[in-house]
Image (cartoon, rainbow, N blue to C red; front, side, top):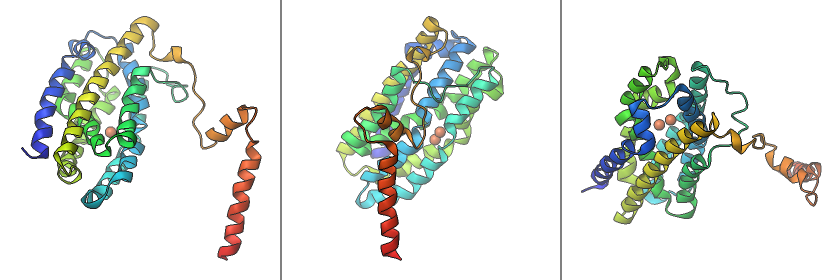
Length: 270
Ligand SMILES: [Fe+2]
Ligand SMILES: [Fe+2]
C-alpha cells in the first residue's frame, strides 16, 4: 500500500473510534444543551487560533523533495487564518457572550490537543504533523453534516454552525491537498508510521477534548472559566512579563538597545 492508502485505512479506524467516544456519543445523540455547544466553540477557538502558525512552523523541517510542498503548506496555513473567529461568531449567533474569551485560558484537554502537534513538530518527527492535520481535515468532511443535523435538532440556528459548515463543505479542498502532501512529504515507511501514530493520538486527544469540555459545563456552567485569565496577547507580552520580574531589566532599556543597534546598522548600510 502506498502512503495515501495506508493513511486512508488508518483513518477509518480512527474516525470510527472517535465517533464512538463518550463525548462524541453525547454530541451525536443530542444529549447536550446549547451551553455545551457554546463551550465546545470556546475551546475550538483556542486550538484553531494556533493552527496557521503550527502548519507554517512544520515547514522549517522540510528538506529535499519535501520543499516542493512548502508553497502549498504555507498557502494552506494562511487559509486557516480567521477560522478561530468563526467559532466565536458561532457562539455569538447562539446568544452567548464572547467577551474576555481571547484573554481566557483553555481547558487542560484543549491545551494537550494543541501541545501535541507542537511537540511532534519540534521534538519528534515534523512529518508526523501530517497525522494531526489529516484528522482535523477529514473528520468534519466525513461527519460534519451529521454533526450539523444533530445541532439543528437542538434548535441551534444554522448561522451558529459556520465553523462546522466551513470545515465540512467549503474546506473539502484541504483534504485533496492531503493526497499531495502524503506522497511528497513522507519519504520512508517510518515517516508513514509516524503520521499514522500522530493521527491516532489526535483522534484520542480530540475525543478527550470533547468529553472534558462537556463535563466542565456539567460541573461549572461554562468550560474553562475556573482557570482564570491569561496575560493579554500582544506583541509586548514578553516585556510585560519581564517587567513584572524584580530582577529583569527594565523594558525601555531592552527596546532602546535594539533600537540603537538597528540605527547603527542603518548608518553602516547607508
Ligand atoms: Fe480550518
Ligand atoms: Fe482546513
